[in-house]
Image (tube, rainbow, N blue to C red; front, side, top):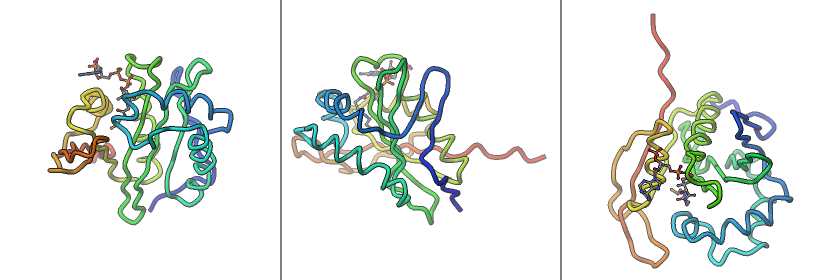
Length: 184
Ligand SMILES: CC(C)(COP(=O)(O)OP(=O)(O)OC[C@H]1O[C@@H](n2cnc3c(N)ncnc32)[C@H](O)[C@@H]1OP(=O)(O)O)[C@@H](O)C(=O)NCCC(=O)NCCS
C-alpha cells in the first residue's frame, strides 16, 4: 500500500530543495521552457506560453490531492533550477514514472541525478516498488542522469515514441527499485 502524505512533500538535500510549485514560479517556468532541448526531449506544449505555465502550476496541487502526480520545483541558491515529477502513477501496482528538466543555466552539475535520487528515495519510502523513466534514444544526458541516479537500462521499446517532427522512434526504458532489505 502507498502511504500518500496529506501535504505535498518538501525534500531538502545539500543545496537543493524540491518543493511544491508557487504561482511566483510562472515567469521562470515560461522562460526556461523556451529552451530547445526541453521542447525536443519532453512533452511540454509548443509554443509554450505564460498561460500554459500558470495552468500547469495551478493544477499541480490538485493532481497531488487526487494521487495522480507528485510535481515539484527544484530550487538552488534561491533560483528555480529544475522541475521533477512522478507521474503515470498506478497505485494498485505501486509503480510510477519520473520526468524532469533542468534550466539551461543550471546544467552541467548533475543536478537532475541528485533530484531523481531524492524523489525516488521519497517514493520508495511511501511504498512505491518500481519507478520507470523513458527517454528518446538520442537523449544521452538524460540516460546518463538515470544511470547516475541508480536506474538500470531495462529495454528498448520499438517505435515507442513520437518525435516533435512527427517521426516515430524507439524509446529507452529505465527502471529503479527499492534497495532490498538485508536479511540476517
Ligand atoms: C537531461 C538533463 C535534465 C540533465 O541535466 P543535468 O543534471 O544538468 O545533467 P549534466 O549536464 O550534469 O549531465 C549529466 C551526465 O550526462 C552527461 N552528458 C551531458 N550531456 C551529454 C551528451 N550530449 N552526451 C553524452 N553525455 C552527456 C554528463 O557528462 C554527465 O555525466 P557524468 O556524470 O558522467 O559527467 C538536462 O540536460 C535537460 O534538462 N535536458 C532537457 C530536458 C530533458 O531531456 N529531460 C529528460 C527527458 S527524458
